[in-house]
Length: 288
Image 1 (cartoon, one colour):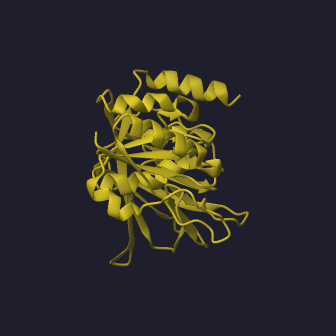
Image 2 (cartoon, rainbow, N blue to C red):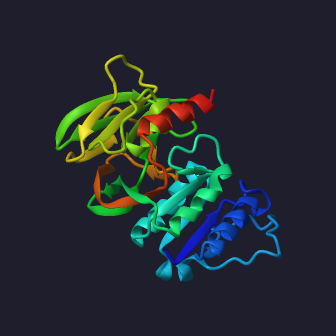
Image 3 (tube, rainbow, N blue to C red):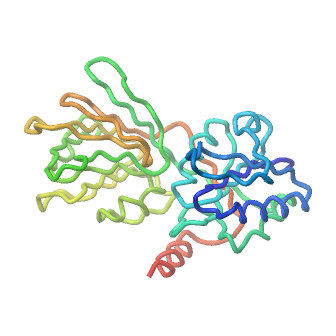
């Protein structure tokens, strides 16, 4: 391990105190640490003048790892960038739940283990999401957590039809639908009534949001399935698609959202030898 990129969330890491401490620990262990902002900050936000920031795109080519500081949203934001570059990512939680984070902000001394190679890699399944309008692909992305189709901010019902490998699997009316990976099972899907699924499980979760009938329930499908979702014929309005909490895309009647297992996998760095159930018990206990 020669070089790591540190990507802090400036809105969570006050005065960048956590990332400063992490950089010092890594450099003392013989690892070069470059601090890069993962996204553009608001113009009114004052960045500290005594801290030097490098450009993320320039540092990616020679980096061995990305250490991300923030909540799960910050890690999700960096996951696609890291995955496309084939770089593993380690999360340091400065948020609330932090299911994907390996360390808490109080455990930074464990970063010394990186210099000795005392870590493992946990591969996480991702989903490919495509939107077809007529014969044109108008959207394509991948996600680590979920693809969410919702009714938007208006108090009304959206009617969605779901197919698995071309066979009708569900037609539901409600606030929308979540198609999630096992990693995403502890996020929005869980809040909507979906099950907790081990990250190693080969499955895709299809969870209705506030369904207006008693037969619409979560489906746990094989990761080999191709999921297609569209507005059903009795739908009169639009719906909106968001991938891993990103900017929403407006869906029209006739659009088809295709979701399937991606060929890419996010590589999460593990420093601790602990079970997924240890993490679940710890996070839910701390949130009470």
